[in-house]
Image (cartoon, rainbow, N blue to C red):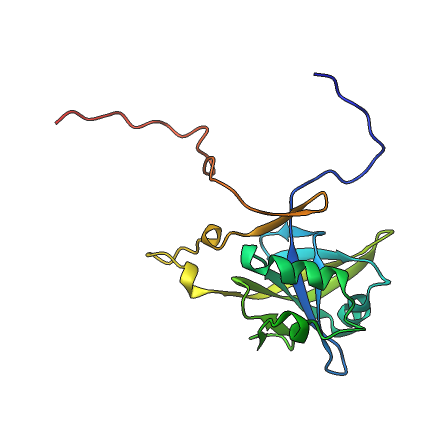
Length: 193
């Protein structure tokens, strides 16, 4: 197998496709679809989103200093795409998609009721990077849909069919191939009765 050298670019795929909700200083709510997002730190819990400064939501995010990352599912794929290709300066995305607007618990921002996980964030720093600016944020609260709770209090997001984005397409996550540490886990010996 031969390798072909390509120009430098982002090839880390798939990525979570999330809908970020924000409320501007004048009370205008908006949803923006983001794929440039991820975990930055566990303790304290932090994540990032990267946004182009010409996007309508960019200035809302900057002035509000807070936002909600709403995880998406197969059932939300059409709304996820719509919120990524339509501008909030032209349409009310909550109205057009029929998504349920719920108030966040800690910050003053809407969250999407149909999302299985809503991650409330406060911006720590905005880092200019080039085509995008990175909003580095502290996670201040997480809301989860109780229908994905298992006995013993474990949350199983995989039941929701999380949505990912890869090279222009949306995909539902697939089958489990292993668990953390399975490659080094010792096998149990069979006991004879």
